[in-house]
Length: 116
Length: 112
Image (cartoon, rainbow over all chains, first blue to last red; front, top):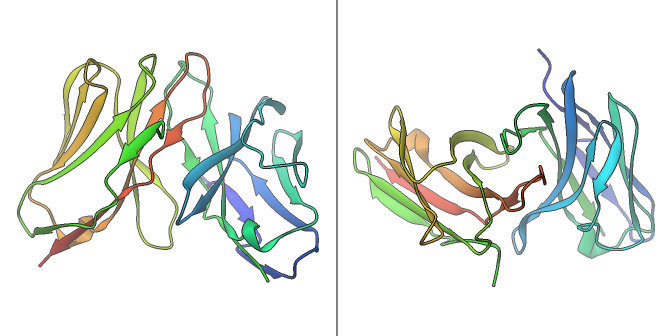
C-alpha cells in the first residue's frame, strides 16, 4: 500500500513568492494533519482535518498560511507571501478512523522549504 | 512551560547498554502517550504507545507511564547503533482532540 505522498520534496523560493505544498493521505484514513518541523521549535501542529473538514487551525501562524482539503485524497498547504522564517520541513500525516486517541499518525516524507 | 518537554541530548550510550529517554507533560487531562523515532532526514515513525499507568513492553522497548507525576519514559534494552536517532515523545492532550502534541525530541547516539 502506498503511504502518505507529499510533493514537492524540496522547494527553494524567494521571499514574497507563493508556495503550495501537496499531500495525498493513505486511502481510507479519515484524519489529515499538517505539521511543521524546525530545529528551534520542533514539530508543531498547523491544522488538521476530519473527513475533509478543518477541525483545528489554531496552529496556523498567520493569515499568510491557508490549507484546504477539497476531497478525501488531496490536501494543500499554501503560503502567500512566503518569508524566510517559513523555512522548515512540512509534514503531512494521516490517521485512520478508530478509537479516540489511538494516535498512530502515518507521516509523509516531508517537504523541505527554503525561503531566501 | 512547554506542553511536552524532553531533554534534547544527545544521550550517548555504548552498544548493548540500556538507553533511558524521559518526557514530562503539563496537561493532567492527557490520555494517550506515544514514542516516535525519527532518523536524520526522515519522517517520524511510531514505535510505542501507552495509555495506562505502568509499563508496556514490546521487544527491546519498554514504555513507562506515571500520570500522577506527569511523566513518560522509554527504555531501550541492548541498544544497537541502528537505534541512533531522535526520539519524539507525543501526547494526546485533550479528550476528543485527535492531534498530538510533540516534544522537541531527544537525540540518542549508540556507540559501537
